[in-house]
Length: 406
Image (cartoon, rainbow, N blue to C red; front, side, top):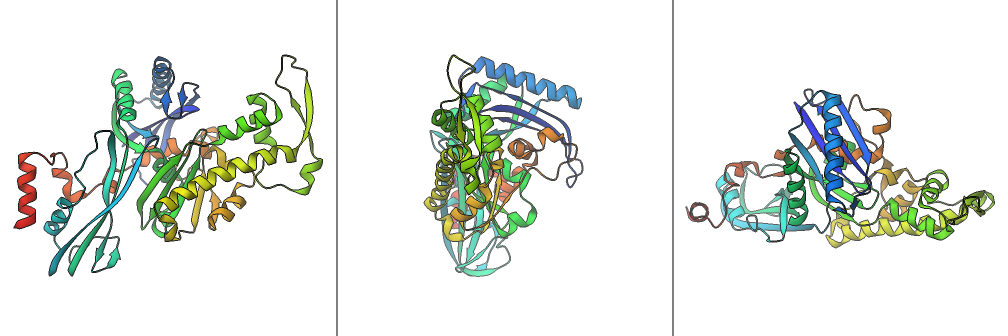
């Protein structure tokens, strides 16, 4: 089975073609990535240029893999996204739990409610309460008095979805699945134990930082904040009056979140931002780090506040995985351990054969993860046949009435 993943990021556009014939040994057939300057915080600043860049990259990936690309999995940034946790409880008076009970609980919930401004990406059951005892597996076969279903619904701005649909329609490419970008990052970096025991995956990207939370092998939350490694680069450029190119080099070569006494004495020559290309000034490494640290602290604190906003900090998940280009910043693991009070490790994409060295780094985690998405893990399987029915249709209302009263 051939899967194609596409990621339109704020700094690059990437496409991967992968052979998933052997699920435990996925093999990359082609990977193409090119920089772009036509995306800002998920919005296109030059539509025609983006269309041409996407077409060029997809054609190059198709040629390299000797594959005709007509369908893709597309990553979607979680800008202006909404996360909703809701539940539905019914009393079944010590009966055996059946699918009829589950459907009845679903029909009494917010499951079928849609928004005029947001497109639902995911809407499924994350766990069940059987007489106040929580289980993550199927409740069928248990005798209980009260049955409670706990749901997670994720939606994004419909304008973003419509923009992507229009773009790929013009390219004659079908979007098979829209995938939340943080989920793709998690799918390429987390192992089975990470998902089962509970983990938080943070992707430190160019213009945004995203997070995905897993527990009992299920995605229970994902979101993003509009701060990334580009903000650090801009801070350095302003702070030492140099070019963005020079600031990026300073961040990569000398930047660290954790300072040491020797940083005061390590002198670096920096080109000044002026018409005279030969003008330089000397700064020490501590100057760079004093600019980097507050921005990294702000970024990680914003992620922590997202977790607190949805009371996820109370779950006390102690496994934190950092990925994305920003995760390569020296000292960030130690700093994240302090803020999250967790075990922290860096991770790059795993489980894939044939990845070229230049495309196997953490900055490509979200692209590679797109091919691992399996829709059936993020939907209510026993409702598959009825999910296309609108709640306000006569048949759906009649079906709901039957489920509640027969």
